[in-house]
Length: 239
Image (cartoon, rainbow, N blue to C red; front, side, top):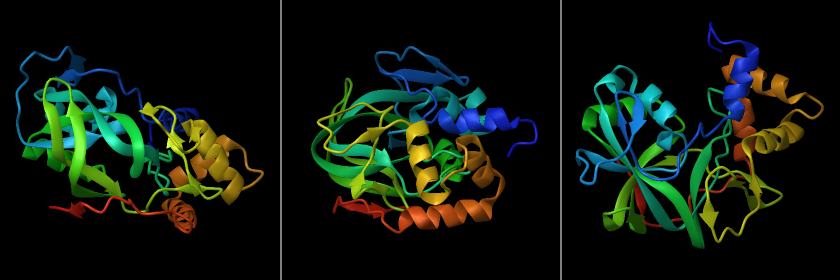
């Protein structure tokens, strides 16, 4: 837990995932979201953002000192045949975050983030629970940019969480044609609490694994027991 954050602030942050992902495109400039120019600069790799990486505040925090001078196009997109579900792990900041899962017929509202190599290296540092991968054979329709069939993305190392045998969609991410149940972050954490620490109040449950990395690892291991890997056959981890 941060030395300057109160317990209430820690819990509030965990419940706020994915930290205000906007609809539409924007340019992250100087750490702030601005309207995206008609022809934004294109640099580095296109990285699929389906959770916190599309949040202006979270992305600026991940870029750290680079954010002040960065100009990062974050472009609205739709990813066919995928859902954004919960990953089978608890994050260092207390949330249960999102993960990609193949879902025929679904259409996920996501973003395509254009990152330079230096910016990408900073984002990598914030993703210890994910593998950086290239997904091939996809259909990613990018605003003003046609359809991409290959994109880089972060794939959960722990698999996709299952509850009562089903994946659980992240309510904050719009996905058309969802086949699985949907929960908000608070509801998902409460469900995990009921499974892992029944009877504990939700703030105490969250604070416990934020303050104790070994407990967080044990809770992640328990969630992984019934998890499923990404069921898309055309992906591979890349450097």
